[in-house]
Image (spheres, rainbow, N blue to C red):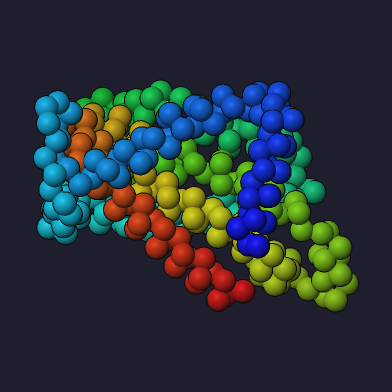
Length: 303
C-alpha cells in the first residue's frame, strides 16, 4: 500500500509538471546554470579532493592524504590563526560601531538621514580594486599621506604594509571601512522593526535612554546581531579580494595576512595542486559549519 501511494504521488507530480510545462520551461535556465556552474563543480571538487592532480595528465588517487596533510600544513594553520586574529581585531569593533551608527540614524532628531546613510554605505558599493589601491597609496612608506601627516609630529616613516602586526591591522582597517555600512544597514533595518510603543511605554515608566537601549533595543536586536556576526565570521574566513590586491597576491610579511581562501587560491591556481585545494575548501566548509552552530547555540542561550 505504501509503495502504491508513493507511486500515485509521483504520477501526480509528473502530471502537474506535464500540464504546466511553460512555467517550468521559463525557470529551467536557472536550474541548468545552477547545475553547471554550482552543483557540478561542488561535487567534482569533493571527488577531486581524494586525488593528486596538477590540472593536466592522469590523476593519482591518494585517499584521505590531502585531508591528513592539512593537520601538519604550516601555511594552512597560519591562515587559520590569521583569520582568528582578524576576526577579533575588527568584527567586535565594527559590529559595535555599526550598531551605534544605526541607532543614531534611527533617531527622529537627526536630519539628513538619507545623506548620512549614503555616505556610510558608499564604501561597500565602491570598486574594491580602487579602494585597495587608494589604501596602498595612503600607507606607502615613502610617499603615503599617513606617514606624511605623522612626519609633521616628528614620527619616522613607518612600513605599514611590511610589518606583520601593522599589516594585519591595516587589513582590518580596510575591511572595517568597507563593510561597516553594510552591517549598519542590516542593523538599521532591525531597529526600524522595533515598535516605537515599547520606547514610549518605557519612557512613561521613567526609563532613561540608556536603560531603554540595554533593556529593549539590545534584547530585540540579538537575532540581527547574530546574523551580522555570522556573516562577519564567514567573511573573515573567506576574505580574499582585500589581501590579494593589497599585498599583490601574497600573504603579506611573514604570511601575516594570509587568509584561508587566499591560501586555497594559491594552492590551486598558483601551485596547481588542485586536489589539495579541494580538500582545503571542504575543510573550511566543515570549520565554518561548526563555528556557525557554536555561535547560534551561544547566542541562543543568552536570550
